[in-house]
Length: 536
Ligand SMILES: Cc1cc2nc3c(=O)[nH]c(=O)nc-3n(C[C@H](O)[C@H](O)[C@H](O)COP(=O)(O)OP(=O)(O)OC[C@H]3O[C@@H](n4cnc5c(N)ncnc54)[C@H](O)[C@@H]3O)c2cc1C
Image (tube, rainbow, N blue to C red; front, side):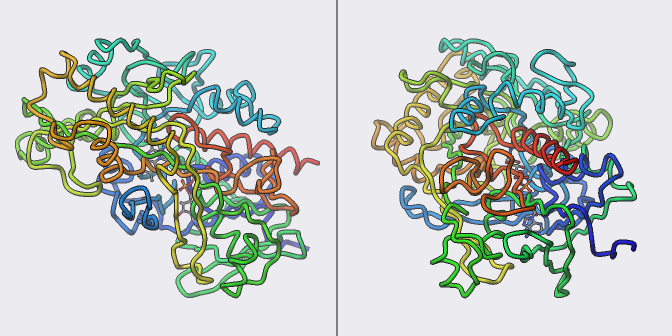
């Protein structure tokens, strides 16, 4: 008997960084019928493909969930913005395009927590499999993969000055942050191919779309995982107000990201029993770890006034410079429209006790007063200091049984004194770089926080008042061997059959870098495990 049109082998929930990888790999053989559900619309808008679109999509609710955190107790009670992609490609369609995997030690730590198969040696082949690095393949890098990786196209004088200033402060030069060692200063590599964003929708989904065994439904909000006892059997979802469902013969794969994957599990009855009961949701399993352990990167940024009109602020406000930027991109795919959110950086050990870099310093070629604002009216640029391995942990918890309502997001930034001390040391190091001759020659003054902000107490207050996330939430469906871990090392939800979570939420802790590459690696490895198990 032919399968019903609503029956598939695999259902993937979320077409983000991870979901598009899974969709490509699971449909490749033609043997499995796959349904991919995505809450957001298709990715046709040009800003989703032009790198500078990053700035334009920051607050656009059509392609961005535009979440906010709960008031953060250690950040003057502020609600911190928490953007997430909501379209094919997910956050890889709106992110800052920086390609940094993390440190080898991060993955070795995952392995030491008991997660067999996740050491750096184990995961490196998956990073290489994903990658199409324009520098070509070597022991650290791959070429020919779906994910375009390229050097920053234009080496802006301010970014070059930042690197030289870091060297003047004693940090080594590093031309490959994903190579033998991460420490040092250099230009970033980006997820771009020939000046166009390489989201997972572009790299993985596009080549798979026409496969006969593949169905994509966009504008489809998954509302509940369906179960027969402890076996996942399908998904219920909404398209507009229309309720639909689909069956999965083999597995349901949740790939909705670090905020929405725990939300979907909780809506489906998997989560802290007291929370679910308080919202009238029947409890299938009391899993207090679902949504717990939220771990995110927090950063502080310093705004500097530039001596020359060479910043992105100038191009955005001067029609002649703006017209040149448009022409540069239209004709050559270069110039300001082809820059990533940050262009160059320096990984440092801010605390003398750290064995590997604990702070990522970066330079962005523009300044904005509040994230999401239009650029400042003066020639300005920004230097940043990001805490790489925050100890602080928070949570994601649904506030309502209505799947259309945002969950409560509480990252608990700066909750430990070590986090505050490390970031303070990072901001001081950043100021030293700004004052080194190579960069100082371009700087008129520090605008924010300004020279009057001096001394540890004032600087810590600045970090609390003006700091924010770099959008790397993870760990809310954490992989591990302890009782609060949500998935095991094969990414199967503990105590359940035919149900996995495969996305950034499974990271045991945030990587010391940027999270897109590691999420794609997780999905590449996850797809292999799913296919191995399907073969029996
Ligand atoms: C503004 C921003 C800048 C960033 N900059 C960088 C950077 O420069 N470099 C870097 O490495 N990382 C960066 N990141 C982080 C990186 O992009 C993410 O860590 C990564 O994309 C997470 O992948 P994911 O698959 O876990 O989730 P996502 O890519 O967010 O995908 C989840 C998908 O699931 C969909 N979804 C959610 N709920 C449902 C539901 N109920 N039903 C159906 N679909 C659903 C969402 O719409 C989304 O498409 C940035 C992120 C943001 C938001």
